[in-house]
Image (cartoon, rainbow, N blue to C red; front, top):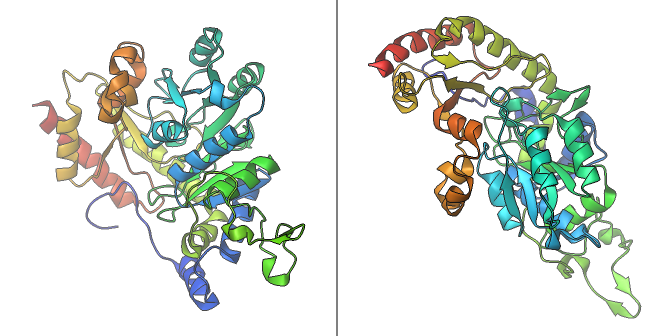
Length: 407
């Protein structure tokens, strides 16, 4: 890689090129065999029974939450609309909760792993006297996995659903299980900088057949069709005839839904990478370890990421220790000028995001870790295409940029 050390990079190699050509040669670009193959392969990789492909990670969150809402029974989500989640994440998580007709309830994060803590979740559930909390939605940020055992136990005892936002943790492991396999439902994103890259693609995973079928309906404008493979053309559609009335299930809708369907191309591109996902994660871990070794000399100024052999890192997150001494924005500008692309660490949603400014007063001072990291954290790339030269470029860039930003 020459020039800028990027946050992420996508390369069209032989398997990906063949996958795209296979779609073109099939004569079908809307959902079909490639989509089904991706769903089966990715569910097997994560360790769930079902996966449903949608057009983005955001759509996966919305469709999954909507399915949980439609599926709710006596203690319905409609009457328990609050969902405990992380304030330190890409805003899509909170957006999806709101768009699904629910309300985010933010709790603070562990400063080392950027994930919500069981103690903070427990405090909210114990105060839920009116029974308004219907779900817990942990976010596995930057590849770090939340402490799922106590979260699962608490959600179960509170009769609340548990939904993992695993968009940034393809292949990360918690006590022998992969992120996204330890809850009622999980969502993934395959955005361009993620460990499995397809541009715009998402997936909802679950072990519950009913929920999977609901997501299939919701992603297709709520039509009654929810079969894995359509048999209508063979005259075998189980829903095509009801009594003496004939109707086409593709144009018969029994719930309100969205158009979150995908094309065959991103499914094929993602499928070509699933068998290599563990190798990709290993290369990213190697780069994280190398960057830690190269940047440890700046440990007084920067809090470097905690390393683990179980993680599949999305990026290399860094937190400035003393913002009075070192300004994040000035450091990012200097790094970009010296050849290293950066991104802010998303921000603390109710404090830093204008779209949630109505919650700022409510959460002021209550999310100190998330607020600090959101204001002083950023990340650079650790992706699998980085070379030793790139790592050296990054190290030299930090040497120069810290001096420049501290002036």
